Image 1: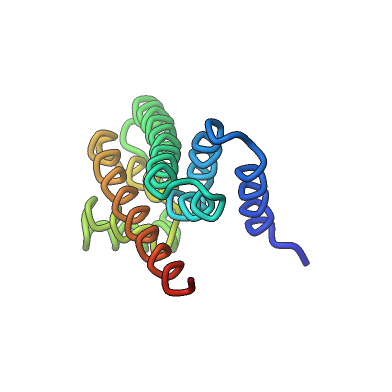
Image 2: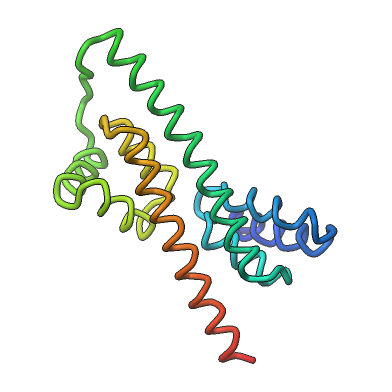
Length: 166
């Protein structure tokens, strides 16, 4: 049975290997924009595809951050439209939302942004933060920090493992 995420990763790897070097970073950026692949996975795809690690990390992080930026701006506009029309938002609490709000109250925007990739794609975390009223600038700042740290950290670990295996 085929796994769609594995198929997508293999598709990106094949594409990177099949195109000229100049086109490879935009493909890695596109992979970084995909939830669950994100910057970390996209950087690995690039490195496995033969791209210099620094180029792969930068392209992957930029692609992830661009996607998160679009999500934050869209969520911010939707939230503004809903709260303007209805006054204070009234939402029925769900178990997932209660869990998120508990984590938010415990860790704040920095903690949720930095720890969020352990559980959810950055796009989902960014949308959740923005929908609760955290300013888009604050969300983007902390998401950028998280993306840079996670993408760089996972890439360094992967490079270490590659060197050990070689």
